[in-house]
Length: 278
Image (cartoon, rainbow, N blue to C red):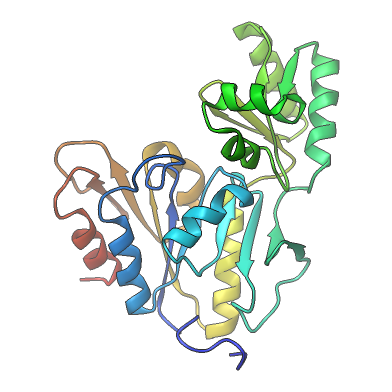
């Protein structure tokens, strides 16, 4: 390890946790109860926890700071894997620099998505409103956020967030079919959509796993944690899958997927025991 970055910045362990955090670390309001202590315990055990999110790199600055998160994270729905300065003593191939992070790009960087959105809107005849086209006040009103926080939401390295402008369900279906034909990636969260040229959460997770494997010289066990809405894209990269549900009681699913209720009083204790293989 680089002597400039003292222990325990990255310690050898047999497990890497990939955790979808949009439901656990809201943009506004409190973190999921106990999640901060859970992250601290993983840190104590030397187990890296890689966050995955639909948010931009700029939006993640504050929660990363608040929880003291020092490990990589995957942003913009798998468009890029961001690695803190000096985290690995090896460099991944084809990296780019964004702020204080080295990034493994999975999607094409901006302005590719911005230009693609204009093309598909024009050719399909379906009007859209990119977030970048809104005034600060309009942006804040549409996202229901203070202007400063809303501005962070449209500072994107890869994808292009937008709204449909008076489009019918038929229009949206045609737009989606056109994007799928071009192998462009769409994500929907309420009325807000985003378009990227190649975003893939599972691929981003696999790229980070490869770096851990190169450093430790063995393949770590990849554990993924996500709600049902977030699990579809993340779970394909995992050896073990922990599904976080809103059920009253936790239930164990079949195979390598185990369900945990977010309302269970012993939620994080059970997950820690599972991660440690008890």
